[in-house]
Amino acid sequence: MSDENQNNVIETDIPARLDRLPWSSWHLKIVTALGASWLLDGLQVTLAGSLAGILENKQALGLSDAQVSAGGSTYLAGAVVGALGFGYLTDRIGRRKLFLLTLLVYSSATLLTAISWNFFSFAIFRFITGLGIGGEYAAINSAVDELIPGSVRGTVDLAVNATFWMGATVGTLASLALLDGGFLPPNIGWRVAFGSAAILALGVLFLRLSVPESPRWLMLRGREDQAGKVVDAIEKDVQKKKGDLPPPQGNKLKLTVRDHTPLHDIYRSMWIDNRKRSLLAMALMVGQAFFYNSVFFTYGLVLDKFFHVGARKLPIHLLPFALGNFFGPVIFGKLFDSIGRKPMITATFGVSGILLGITVIPFIAGLLDPFWLDACFTVIFFIASSAASAAYLTVSEIFPLEIRALAIAVFYAIGTLIGGVAAPILFGVLIASGSRTNVGLGYLAAAVLMTGAALCEWRIGVEAAGKPLESVSQPIQSRA
Image (cartoon, helix red, strand yellow):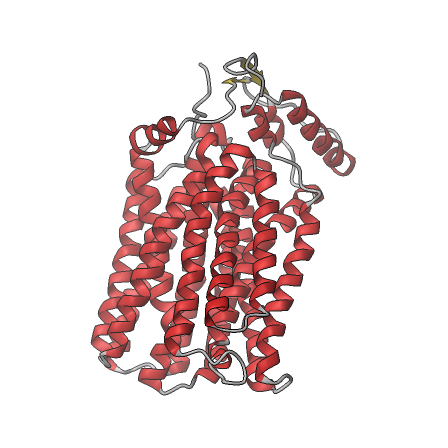
């Protein structure tokens, strides 16, 4: 940007023009191209977990239990680093550049994973894969919410996040075929699985080439003409299918143009001006991350230790989980727009925590067999999946446009480090103790975090249903 444009004041109706658009096939195309990230992440996580037994086979990579776990940890570490690094760049240089770059990193690293030759190469490629998927979380959530009309933002965002579990379902079925189908030998099957995921990602990359830069981000940088052309094209496409469009509502937004947001402004906005919102974001993200990792990602160990269910049968038990997690947000999503964010987020977090707390009692008493434990957790996660998706929606909505992607990255990283690291370590120790009571107390801790997050939402949650993003959180660069 030239010096003469820096600190200019502009007036724009770009947000109002985007929010007044009816839902259309254009929006569906955008959501499909961007939302496929979560499907790929779900596929990755499920494949890596379910194929652990194959990776330990000497005809494959011959990894030890510790090395398989380390591979998961490097993926997680990469996701945290990628979210923070790419999240900052998403706000700095644009949504489009980053959602293309992060998917390219992800697909390339996944393909390289398929040709790993030892533990070291496998771990390095998993770390790079994590870098890409972590960056996706920040770039995609911000882009989706800035392109989707405010009236359906909750419905769409929850549905997009739910596709993680569609990927998990595909990964589970693929794992069943590879583990029990006998279609491919051990040294080939796992490579085909990761290679197929990479090819799918490259296909999504081509879809994304038609997705424009966020007009909201363009207006921040003073690129009014470019932003206007993007919105003109969107309106023309929507108008062909929906007819005449309603006029934009409200006053134009006044913004001071800057080529970037200084770090001190980022810090002030996140930790001083929006301190309560940051506490809310932490409560929701940590609660849902610990909840999921305490149950879902250690379930195979629980089945093995207390019910003597072998690893080869694990995908059968994970399949209803994945289906419940997918259909929950799809069914409840509209209620987050019609009833509102605060009541629905409070309810989904609270009910999930209470149900898990209730399930602890028969679990400790040994009254549940694998079938009924599957059933209990499927019902719990049918509700909890909406809560988890709403946590990402909340963070995307309650922080200013200038730091939206970075805020998603920061609280994703905090939630992942606490839930993704602390929960598996804690439950590894609890399960190894052989005590149902100890594991039950761990589940109870997860239930307390979820109900605590529900109370936090009830007390300081922000109602954003149907509202323009700029009214939920005023841009840092806005002028009265």
